[in-house]
Length: 179
Image (tube, rainbow, N blue to C red; front, side):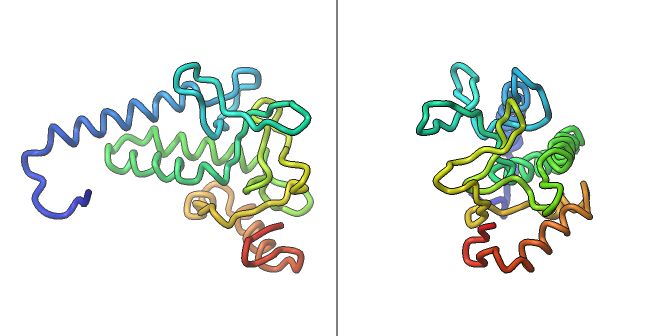
């Protein structure tokens, strides 16, 4: 579906689409947070019937509600786009609040690297880092597209430090961005 060409006469359809998107965003923003330790961070997903967050099941049987900020970068883009289209700044503000909270709580103090990626995430309820032991909680960004344009406006120093560290550290594997 492209937005080029004549869309005259489709105002009602566009209003319906925007209404559906807003309803979805509002639902995610209302049920996607931890019920045990409320914060701006979101679960990576939730059951649409029970609204319980998705969990990672470890081999030892314990479950962890996942909040992987790397996987939520397109969510931030959606919020920004919705603000742009609707001229309603609340969605952009939600993206900023979520990102700012992550930048304060999801960055390794010594290395400056973000706690995110394919095999490392935050436990939504405890905010502690977790991940599969077999992967040694390695950071991996080969399928993620960080929204650096937003992150740099939230905390320029931390964002640039993480980027520099990923590019300059000899222990980081460039093909997979594992660190």
